Length: 464
Ligand SMILES: Nc1ncnc2c1ncn2[C@@H]1O[C@H](COP(=O)(O)OP(=O)(O)OP(=O)(O)O)[C@@H](O)[C@H]1O
Ligand SMILES: [Mg+2]
Image (cartoon, rainbow, N blue to C red; front, side, top):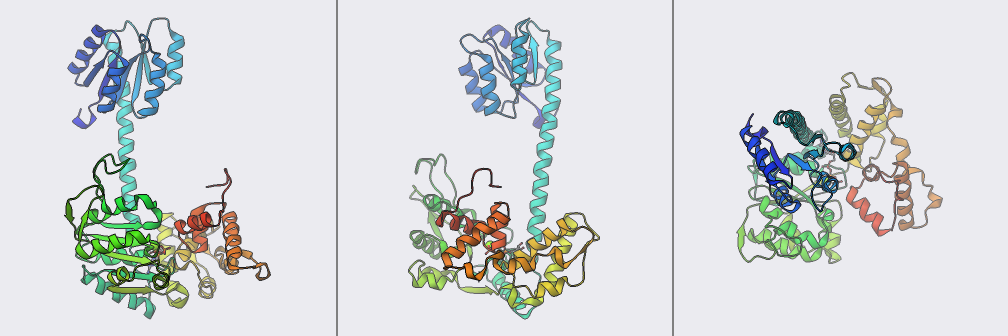
């Protein structure tokens, strides 16, 4: 058995002679064994070692062994338990098995009995480990694929080609900060990744941070890190984003919403490339490049004193603007074909084709959610298409153009309209927040913020 497969066994029984004897037997058989004669002792070992198997005597003085079984199954769900019971106590055995015990042994038992029981458990544990490993590997592979797909740059329009040229320039100046502006779904993060992965920083971290997704009281420690004990909950030293991104790229999404009081600190870190962890005095050097993105008019935020002008100047050494898809319609066809191809592979539908009229219909549509909307539309069309040819009716381009069925005469003011639209879209999307955000052409975080702002709640049971 390889070291990785060696299993750790803990024996909990009040009879010292019994635990000692088993302990010795297990060690001789090549297992890592521990023994405890009281519940307290067993707790210590369970909390400090990775125990795979617990041999538990259910008749411990003063405590109910079944209660211990219940608790450890919750606290250590991947640990298996073999219960040891007295002869004739079938009732307890049945209860124990119902509570998740893997096997049972009745005292007195022979070494051969326990050996068989352990071999059975061991096989099960090993299979479980293999399964976990495979799941981890699979998720790594799919994450990698995802990243690859998300780094494609498709487009033929002169506007898109200019964006591409600007990205190439940015990749050649790895210390210059870049500000990317553009409506939601135009490809800001996509271009940020392209810049990073074609720059000399490519072998280091690309860390994407959406400041709206972090609660305000944790923001400083997330960016700067903290020292153990700096505040309640700071149980160990922790690196912040600036340190994690040493030699890499920090992508700050939705920069316009960055809390004002943090902006001065971010500015200082960006200028000096030196940071101090919360609760610490030591200065740490870190070499990062910031690529930031916003879909708001950030200059307006500067005018309204919500965003610092000096920070804006610092962040937009290079500025790349991504025009909305409706202003570069020549990109629609190549993007559509690219997404059809991507999803045909992903869903194993190699014969899927785009039927007549689809491109014409898409060319007339305004795509408020830009490239993301086109991508989602294509994914949905392929999933729902009856045959192998995608038709115009597979793309919901007409329905969503009229603001999801809201009539002009219903419109009272912008706020009321916005609330009504959000409600309607949530309903249409069966209260799935991500799909609703996609349909609205905003991010999920932005949707959640708006729902909070307007006090739009989802009843229990509706949420997906
Ligand atoms: N030029 C492109 N070629 C291929 N795919 C693209 C291109 N631009 C964007 N995409 C795809 O469109 C989707 C949306 O892009 P991205 O997330 O970069 O938009 P965004 O501007 O950051 O949106 P938001 O403001 O909502 O965060 C992603 O799946 C991305 O891979
Ligand atoms: Mg984005």
